[in-house]
Image (cartoon, rainbow, N blue to C red):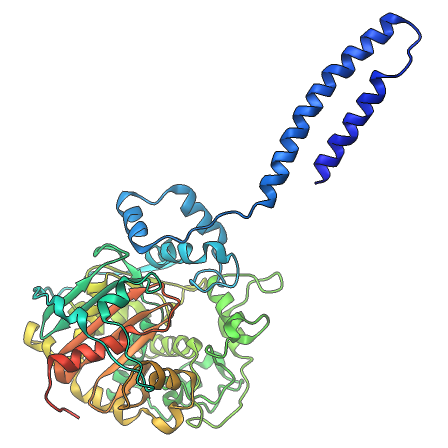
Length: 486
């Protein structure tokens, strides 16, 4: 608007110039020619300015990519301008699909972040496994017809209908039964793409800690500061290792409350530090930030989901083993899993992003899940994760009376359509009475493991709808084996 007014004023001044009574005809003609030429130029500028103003007033059309469009983009090569925008906007607040800033491009940018996270954060490579074995396909499209009901009796659409819906945003989903892939679909990624696991990463740490406890190398009743002395002299003193493992520390750390998106909270500062973002003009160290934790309840009395618990456990693993977390993870678990090369993101200080940042193919996540089932020993002749370890996870779980009132517990009751969830434990969200367990991740990532039925289900996505696929996974597992194992 300001540019248009300025040009209009210029037109008026030229009109005055054309009618001004000069002293002689030559001077009059000279200035009238100048005035006429500048008038035409000004009129042109006016038309341009008006057009620009009109264009500015029109809302910029936006269109969120479909999964099929993004998959095609991956196959043809992601346009450089798309990449540059995603990189320009990247921050702790923007890397998930429900970003508070730049919502007009958040879902599209999240698609790119989900499959190229190592371009944005320091990263380490986890080598391909030494153990090799095939997962043959015995695909059963009829599994896409499975449904499940919520507690109110509402029946969800079939799995296939859900996956085909625009709001699903599930990029890949796979189910493995007795060592064979029985269902596989990639609506929004290629089978070879390495996708971020988000919080499905957490059980890697939880399992290593539980294993070290069972080896007698860690005491579950010892203060966490015995294993992470960097936190001594803070509210973490007296918080037991087991309570950190089960997210029942009694400290004021709770991601689900929304604090990770609230300015100046400890949770947001922790996440900002993990991304190297500035807080009040400077970069903070995540350990310094969480030293400010405050006690709000006794350990084991309150379940509060917080990624910083997992991060603390990863440092404990390094201090006990005297090895980089990635190296010990490979040595103890992944060298046997049959996985291809994987990538894990790091904090600016070189610490592994233990709570969120493993990246792999969908099949490799499924192969990791197989480590917890009898199937793995049948395929390879080696037991890596024993049933004894799984039994210990259930024996030390967060009981349902403490878990159920939490936000994660309410999600189990409202979304999974099953009343046999018995609690949470060792960094897995849901433990069922029949021995199955599962972990979900932000924007719809998931891992469902049912050792008794020799079933593993995995999926990746950037979905903003509730994390329904776990409910479908359980329904499929139950349908594949009707016998009562509870």
